[in-house]
Length: 332
Image (cartoon, rainbow, N blue to C red; front, side, top):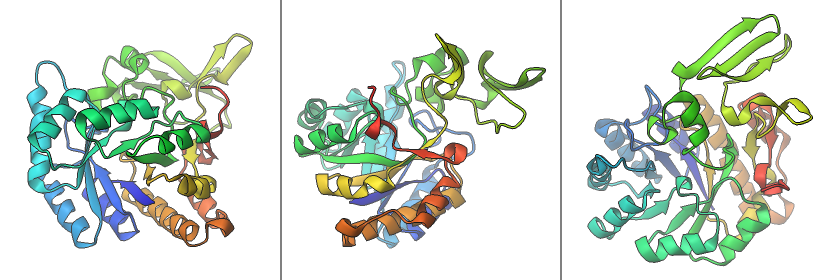
């Protein structure tokens, strides 16, 4: 079981490598990258430097070209892929079927991973991508129960990668039409579902209000900590439930307790979310997960998450709390 860690910058990449990642994943500074945050990501020089640093230490580098190519300029996405091959990345993470077709025809030896943006949630879909494009790994969306993950692993020869820690996304994985409607910008090509320029804070007699694109997302009491406003983690009035987390709570996924089961069922890799996070965050989370995976592989029957691991992860978790998310959720 490999540990796959985020790198939003060269500094974060070095922290991930130095603290035990088997592979880092990263993106370019353009619309080909679903985490196209201002001030982050890699240009050609930084990517070359990161590849040299990681490869010298036995760590692989995966490039996420995981947005959907725009109709007017698919060449931009194809050029990014060609550049990745030239520089020597170990795999590319793709979602767009057209780009997958381009990749397998133009670069037949290139290792292809199906991005979580592809939203393949069953073995038939994953096997389709394998037959059509030769993918060798698929990243499962964070919407499956543990037993559903087991069924997928049992019925495909494609390597399965699952999210282990970080923020949650309820379903559409970077293609949220709701946030696109509210903010006027597509999460697919603008890198985020809540762009900072669409966020507004207002002190009101009823409390601190957070708005996104003018839409009221949350209202905080005097003793509450305000989180960054995203539509799926806002509080709304729905039927009899007033001011409630109707879709998703602001908390982080943490599957440390599930490691023995994930290992036993044959999950090939654990993915850590967070290319927008700081190098210090990457270092801390990578260090904990490296220790946990090593402990679980050594003695899976005696493995238990240590208190200090959970405390370290909760300190950097959203809302400083964690959940098993869909792995234990009743609704789908």
